[in-house]
Image (cartoon, rainbow, N blue to C red; front, side, top):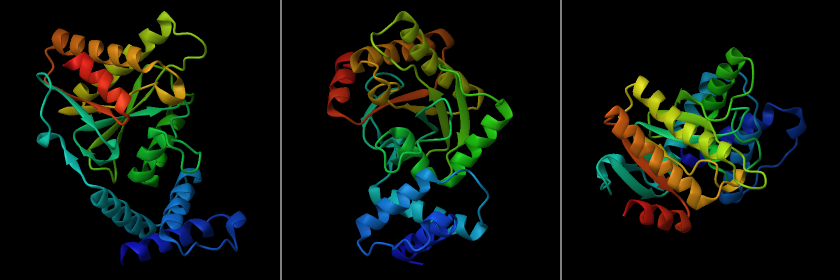
Length: 257
């Protein structure tokens, strides 16, 4: 199958799963097809699917990521010992684990084509990631608490694992509790990575954006927590601070030198 054929196959398969989509026409325009496929991935509830679907999906997503360009952590230059700063799409980073800024449901973003990192990670990992998260949450029996972390395979992402953590939501003004919970997100991810022998972890800017944590305060907490953890535990885990926006790049440059 070509990439175009895979995309059409996946769209048709997902449309066929729901009677509400019967009769929906598939756009002829490739960018619109890609948006439709992503939207269908985003809204699909965790449920069984055929191995044929997974085979085509995996090939499609891996090729899509390859076309975007994969960055290997071994090709990055540290800004400090064991610490890296990298601006780019975290779903294209090959490392031990990437960190997902999840919500308390832990099932990924259901908003079609939303711009959050939770949406991107679940989209390019494939539908297996939502299924794995659903299994974890069913066993747990309640929503995920803020400041802790869970681990899943990364499936079709170039990294090995995804660490999921729910950051604090800043409602009006920043509180001491918000700061403590954000620091706990970073510590929990590092501890979980250590327990699983993961050599490198890429952190997104947890709780900024949709959760309204001020970017500069969040970055300061991130850097301080990572440095304290490495010093106190003598950990050899390499840490990548991943940023997407220019403003965050500058903030971390100022903090890290």
